[in-house]
Amino acid sequence: MLNHWVVVPTCLPLVLRRCHTCASRHFRASGRFRVNANHKLLDAWLLVLCTACGDTAKLTVLERMNVRSVRPGLLDRLHANDPGLAAELLQDPVVQRRNRIALDWADAWRLDTGGPDHPDREVSDVSVRFAARIPVRPVRLIAEGCGLARAETERLIAEGRLVSAVRLSDRLCGDFTFTLKR
Image (cartoon, rainbow, N blue to C red; front, top):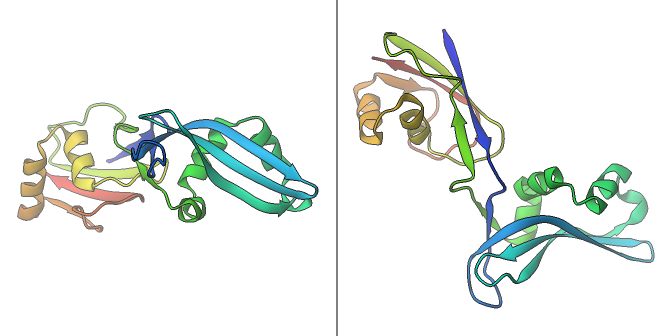
């Protein structure tokens, strides 16, 4: 029987970027946008707040875009300060690259295993799905989901009793499956 686990975000991740005021490296996304129009050109930014001093920084979302080329639905979401849009844009690789930021997902996700695993089973097949692009080591997920120590999980991998098609020691943000033989 195949068990389904899901890695779910619990809040917006911290933004890693240097603060120009206090030299801190952590910003919290406020979920608010600033939109500015200059004739037919539009700029939009996601506002983030420094966790140390509270200074506001702007992450560029749209830059000098013609108003007619912006989808009306996107413009409405920007004006409404849609928190779902903030989450989508923070995870967008184009926005991350343009603003030279990285995300810190520590304490911003949880693993839903769908209930306790049946320890009396000889073989457990598990499918892990990511609800967002959260980079996590599969060894950590397996240890947490099965209630094992991380060292015990790595020992099971070395013995060949924990197998997967992906490398379990690297960070992963995509779906994978594994088999545990007890």
